[in-house]
Amino acid sequence: MRHTGFEKLSFWEKLTEEQKKRLSSHVREAVYQEGQIVRAADSECAGILLVKQGIFRMALCAEDGREATVYRLKKGDVCVLSASCMISAISFDVQIEAETEGCLEMVSPGVFAGLMKENIYVENFVYRSAAERFSDVVNAVEQLLFLTLEQRLVTFLLDESAEEGSDELHFTQERIAVVIGSAREVVTRGLKKLAKEGLIQLFRGGVRILDRKGLYGKL
Image (cartoon, helix red, strand yellow):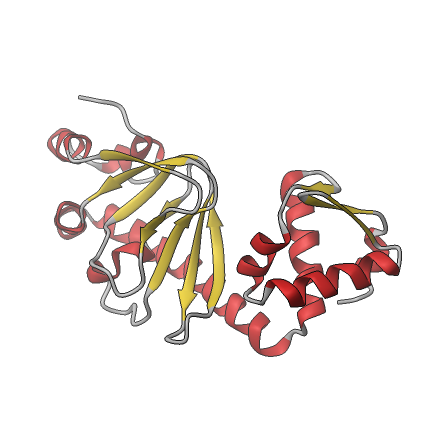
């Protein structure tokens, strides 16, 4: 039986030996290049995705082409919202894009749906994971509705700094615009304003935070 990242998930030890073999035998790996679409909105159900390497971005997409980033998946993270066909309560569609070069482990919806019916621990894992991610969806929508562009920009900078454990963030302005759901020109103006106020410093391909307390004061 081949080893996969799914063995590290909470339900694994609750599977029978037959279920473990079945799941392992149906895991396939796929490598994606930066910017490549893993799952487009309105496409077929992709099944369960587990990040083996790299960073992947999940977004809600409007009919006019606008995107709202919901969350970013990193090594060891699992996406169940990509398997909306398995969860009848999910009525929205998502797009998943490779933010960096990366590798995913995938299990088809049919295989995982079968395990959900047979094993209560698998079913609980899927619905718990969906609920956790749904809170991210609500948070993303709230930010778009109730925060100004500057507040969304500052929130992004502070969140990324905390995530990376560094004041130096390597993001192009175009990438920041995509993540916070705005236009590049608007993001550029916002960053220049923050830089003029001495809160950040811009450099080619990134942003350096100079005054964290000052940024928090913008929220």
